[in-house]
Length: 345
Image (cartoon, rainbow, N blue to C red; front, top):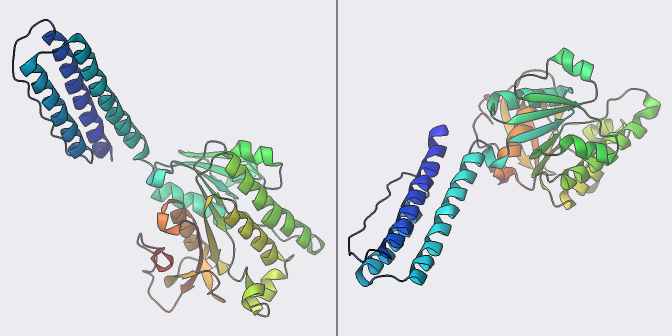
């Protein structure tokens, strides 16, 4: 990567040198009306090489015309002002390319909400392994639990974070990140608190995080949800999976409200709806489908974490709702490559 980014930068420096040389030459011509051939060539293997050579040829043509007919002070100033901006422009473009090249899809800093959860922790681990140059901010409710799990290391910073906190606190925590992976979800405890907690976390908490992301200038928002979230509207209200899952405080109904809010937010989003979550290793192939087409199935949390992370960087997942399960009867190759989202593209 370093070798690739150095080419446009080196090219821009050469072009800047040529431009300055031309400008100095023109000024000297004001005092020496000698006709001397001026030639220059730029050879750089980079995406900018063709445009740069074209610019240099136009500059050479102007200089040849100047050397043949002489130049006035006003003409010299005009030539300099036409030449230098191009050099500056290409140098800035090369610098921008150098900065962004280490970040897939322009994403160099990712915030993972719910990083101590069973899926969130896996997302952090996958990010560290697959994208070691990406900075990770792990949002956790318990710093003690994060320390126990050993989340903070190298390019991972840990911050205390709870989606039930005030929106301004959420915004402060994610300020400066490029993407947010929301892997939060209410944890069942007291049965009499299910509805309250599901509403506070899966509905209002996610909505507040979406608003905070907009205010913080986040580029991408990836949300974990569930298959059958839209069960009532697609005739799956009596599906056993819908009945059982929604019995936990109406969790699917609460998630649907947050999903719809995210889709209307104006953010670039991907909503990942997995089947029943398993703590075991991936088995079989990954099945990727469009929204409201998967009504049963299970999937390893490891694979869910992979899809969450890849959705952050893959443009084919932009503005999409994707449903994922595993087909254990097939081999384990599905989803192993870099083309996870082709089925929904």
